[in-house]
Length: 126
Image (cartoon, rainbow, N blue to C red; front, side, top):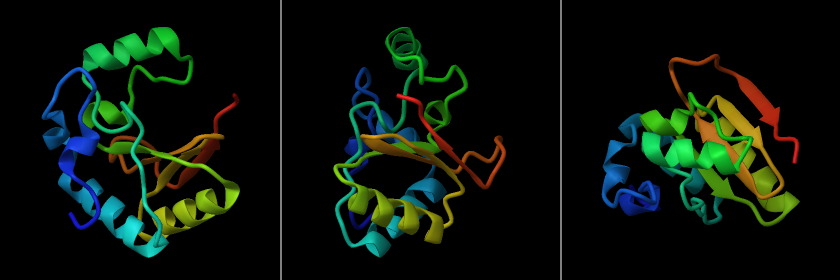
């Protein structure tokens, strides 16, 4: 990857677990970062997630999903600091072929999980 270190995708409870991310997803994400021309910062717990971490997250956060694509290494949450930054990120993700996006005030969820419906964009109610 040109723009990421695999450790950025580690589950907070398992160092080295970023290695479980899907290679084709990471390639698309890296390409999206190139197209955007701005840094992508992956949130803590916003890459690969262990089942244990995801279960704990669901207890704290109603947006967390029992069937999260993070569990299979097909998702990343990218921190967003402004509407302009969000526009660059979303546009580049779509151009790179990532076909499932979730939009929140502080992050963009990107995933390409082949087991879930494609070509979706949703908004998180915060």
